[in-house]
Length: 446
Ligand code: NDP
Image (cartoon, rainbow, N blue to C red):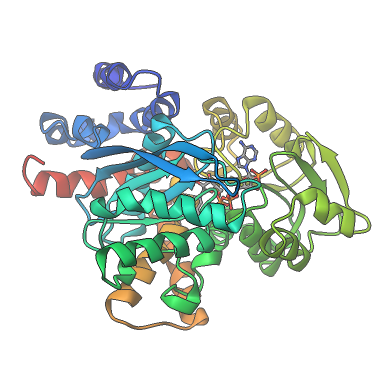
């Protein structure tokens, strides 16, 4: 429920951003947590900090023309929403997926403000992308698309201004093509302008693994706070992209067994535990599907259009996309004895699903806390680029683990402080909000 003092403000956000349903959903979730904050700090209401946070500092929409391998011309739409720079340069990924439109970019950018604040690093919030579908496209087509996209984006970004990274459909290959075009246009080798670079040319070790590893660490901390652990737990991980693969790897290292993963076509159930090396080979090297994994892995079964959340488990990690876990799925998970859910993806649980988890009082880690390890490690990549240094895998992973423990403890403590013990949604929203709100007041009317 939104506090009655904030109802009008929320209604205004909806009216000013018509049709952007994902943005409304993300904003509502934050608004629902903020009542007690304004009661405690009324000056933040007087300063209209919430209204200011909901209005991006800058929104860029641009044409991305490109030619496919047969010479046909295509026109896509590119976006960059520079949401908030109170804490540092805008920071957030680029998503290439046909579903991308302004509402998706704004929901992701809005979440990113609070997530980045929770990491404790000096980074603001932004997000971007294009309604381009990379599936089935050749390397050359991907390169031409990335070059065209950067030909407009380059003028808006910079290591002290706005630092994009990857997201759905944008991995190290795409970051390489984007950086190459940036370097060519600007005549500057500005490593810190993009993160998620390959380790052979300025990328940080652990960045590839960071979001998935971080989600597993956050899960470990939530279980630990309840006197439990990942040891022996049966785990579901949806998706099979960057976040999912490394969440699976780290869950295994921490003693759990991931028995299923998925893609937008189907679900693979592998009761003995997903073979991560085979999954990486299929997904990262061959750019295949989970059905290809199942076909090569004797005992595993594959169900086209299957619902992963129907498989009994102790822990669920949604790592694919927004609104992939519904109220019905949440009830199934709770009924099957699931004790913890951590969001590797951004907003994968519908509002009804989140309510079910909170009412059942299972440990529920929202994405802005549980998947913040990716952007935190991006900030570590920026640090290394700025000092022309490169750290070892062990050192960087150690930093990541510490950051995730810190985020967990901050959310846990803040939830308690504001009368909602054990509620990580409230804890993450309030702690993230306060970390941005205070600098916004200190910097004057911006
Ligand atoms: P990838 O593109 O590497 O993988 C995405 C995975 O999700 C694929 O398995 C894809 O399957 C699946 N997927 C995408 N859309 C849908 C859909 N509509 N229905 C079902 N499955 C779908 O992306 P990432 O792993 O990087 O990102 C996953 C999530 O994590 C996103 O929400 C992203 O915003 C979030 N995130 C990512 C971070 C990162 O560092 N990469 C950081 C923080 C959050 P298919 O191939 O069939 O489309």
